[in-house]
Length: 194
Image (tube, rainbow, N blue to C red):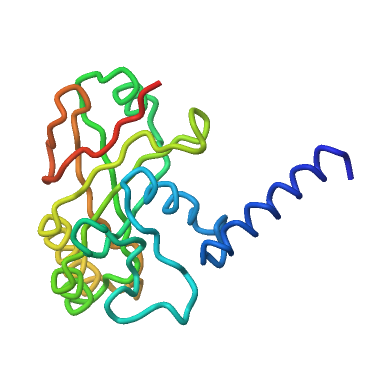
């Protein structure tokens, strides 16, 4: 093993230790580190992933907004388009889409739980090639917009014959130049600034 490989392994071990101290079982798995970073940017209290700290009130939420105590759900995606990336970095006019995938939202009852619990939804866009430790964008997405799109996804899941219950999505589109939403509603919380 080369000295660079050993150094890399040691850094991974250190990140794992720090994550565990913060109550996160696997900070490098399923982009958990992104949730930890989003909580920091938004001033939220990141939730632990330790099983004994999960309750029906907070199960599935990633953080809590200390200003009102409401649970927050974070969704992240990698930037797949140079055009989207350029629009954010240069604040150019045009559409940037952010998606949130809700694997547990495959029944009407599960979607209704999001409404009932008053969860705040935040979508983020990342490009590790530009900045692996900061998102390109974070938006707060209107909860009713999320619920409507997820209910439509439930209808499609129930009509399909493939048996899949994963990948129910909600989407928003923003224009970084104007700060306006062109699909959905919410608030742009953060745009990366070089």
